[in-house]
Image 1 (cartoon, rainbow, N blue to C red):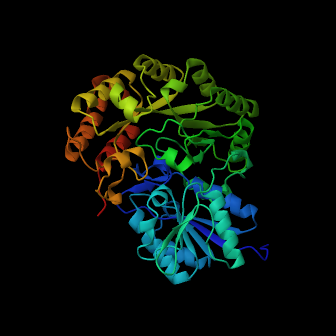
Image 2: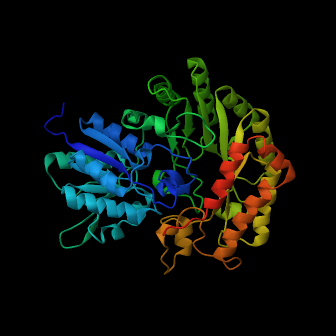
Image 3: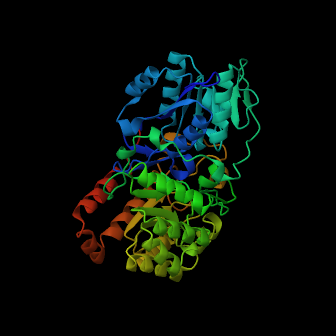
Length: 474
């Protein structure tokens, strides 16, 4: 039952643009255009929802992509819920559409509307240009949205709430004090998966439903292009193995989901914690397959063996660049030992763990010869999958500050694959041509083609993905 201080709240993951699907949680909350076969749950909203429910509020999560709804149907569905407060997620490349939906809901329902996400966190002032929202939630959202809901329930304004920006009646934009990051992540309730359409979330090549887990936050490497450090901070904050295992048990035994994608920036940073999580999975005899993202230098054979026994089937590894100069300046020097990289990819394959290499092309000082260093390294490592992205200067990142100057970037082009601009050695068109060349060169090797033909459906998916990488917003 609702209490006297309870309100009905709708948390919204807006629809993707028609040109491509956007996964809003990627790139540290800036979002990224993804394979249409990939649909992650809006796990950030589920974390917010669990905190709100703990306060006694009635919460709905409306995930437009999971429901197959465009902006018109989304607005109608939200209106039918008769909410008293609305909070929308956002991404860079869909920001104009996200704001249009927020403005429509605010005008039609006459209730407070907030927007959250890394893009709006680092460009909060311009969000108010057309009275799109009542406030911007900056940074980690759980406790900020909780405090906003308390104000709505009490019939009070938002002035003084830490971690928000809002607009006065006279037009002045007020940026309230930063909110401190959550120190003890174990104190947060488990994400409210009962509010999600869990059976609709999927990952290419995986049969059945998937879900995501954030077992840690933060990363001190501070790579020049990375949005995760902006959203989560430069200090690692780890959930305990016991807390993570409690969520995994809930996922399998309550929600009937048997595939998990860990969304930590570098999952294996604290190896003993990962060993303990794996031991817990084995002790509980969980029927679970899982994958994670991490870095070569925080993996070894013993850990890979334990992970494989505990159900790890896929690891995505940040390679970024095979050039030492680029690695040291832009990539946190996370991959300087190429022989170790070759060993890690080889060991994973021997243990039955698929691998993906994340690579980037178009750093400010990068020459075609430096790109060649990356391509040679990736070919030596020979991962099962590879992803080449255009270096993108997301607002607030060191790279953005390095490049922006007096220029304004078009956020709608921040898909992760379009080159926003060139450098002194390669034009934007040449960077995108290099990305196409990199894909063709990697997958057209005779030995590679033979491996790919063993899984024709997956090969067809990769080919289809290749032809949609550079699709642009209309």
